[in-house]
Amino acid sequence: MSAAAIEFRDVSFVTRQGRALLDHISLRIESGTTTAMLGRSGSGKTTLLRTVNRMIEPTSGAVFVEGRRIEVEDPIRLRRGIGYVIQETGLFPHFTVTDNVAVVPRISGHSAAETASRSHELLGMVGLDAATFATRYPHQLSGGQRQRVGLARALAADPAILLMDEPFGALDPLTRAEMQDMLRDLLARLHKTVLLVTHDLDEALYLASRIVLLEEGKIVADLPSESFSTSRIPAVAAYVRAVHRGANSSTALVPNQVAP
Amino acid sequence: MTMGFLAQHASEIETLTLEHLWLTGGAMLIAAAIGIPTGILLTRFPRWARPILGLANVIQTIPSLALFGFLLPLPWLGERAARIAIAALTAYALLPIIRNTYAGIQGIDPTVIEVANALGMTNLQRLRMVELPLAAGFILAGLRTATVTCVGIATIAAAVGAGGLGEFIFRGVASVDNRLVLAGALPAAGLALLADGLLGLVERRFRIPGRA
Image (cartoon, rainbow over all chains, first blue to last red; front, side, top):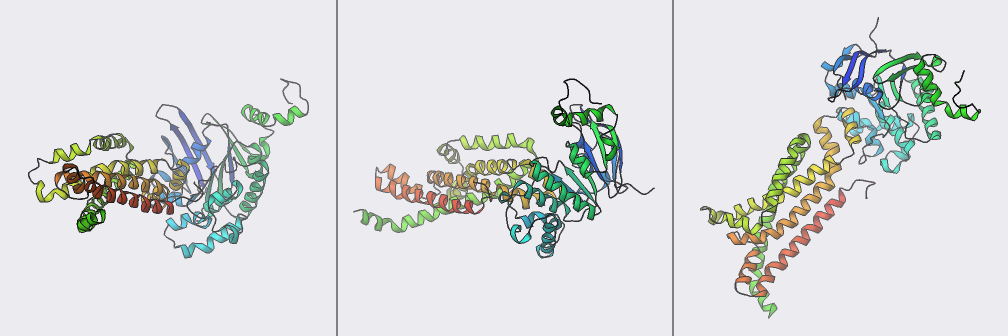
């Protein structure tokens, strides 16, 4: 059996106050797949994501990336090889779009001249016209455009793994749908292993082939996307029901009646 | 009469202004060389922030005349008066510089710092590419405050024989000659305004795009 792209082996994370944010998580993520981690706020999904690039060190257990135990790796090298996208984008406000996109190659020792054409190519990939946007600053962009720049930056060093923490959470529904389309197209063309943290069930279903549901630091469900909505696992059914309340109420469901 | 006074004292005004610049400039260079790295170190070891800032604060509260007064009995004061004055001025300039460097870096959006780390920046890359540029306005504001304060306090340095425009002021007070007091006070005020204006211009250049 070849090494998984990411493997969590009995990973726990306990805060200094004694709260277990991750409770003995074991999970294998195969190369080239997109896995969504779903769960309510505080379920541990972001914490789990952040163990992959050692932004959080598990208190016990181990994380492996491409078969290598990452706690013995140089965190700087590890992080440069993993794409990272977050909701607030975290674009550097004093860098132009081009400089933001090129930041990982630049800190890895490439010159501005070397990275310029690559940056423009990446902007094209995420649907931004380089001629228009290259010299702009983050504050001159819309939320969706910023998120595209954030994605281009994550892809700049051509990482095999992409960590996405509610990347589209702050966007309006229409922009979010556009971004999801763009990402889906992109992932269909590039061979990336994606870990996507979200609490948006639709987003998980649309983008991921596998959905892992977390609750209080534990995995309560681990299902292929296509069977998630129809699963009889109580936690999954509850999540699906909670998300579809609006649709249900519009079909005039009697209060307290459980959907069949 | 005033013209006569000016003509009579022109070369002295020039000399004392240059001395004043030397005292202030020397103190500011040393204070910046100590204060900015100290402020940066405090962001790396935040548990030291309170005691260090507290100490700088205490120094700041010592009345300047009293501080220079304490220095008076030092036996080796004489010809080294200027150096001792610079040391005292440096101590006064430290607080705004350390505090603003520390606060400027601590005040950066934590998301930006987090992303800098997550993208694989080393500590030094983060400092050079992210923290210093984003805190530059704050740091310069601290230098500006310190400089203006220093120009003013440097007039007291004349009390220990360190020279500077304070000479005029002390002499004027002793001989009840307002023209002498003004001959010291006006150039000192001019220097303070000039330093404030120039550093203000530099500060503007470092403003972060999109922020007011």
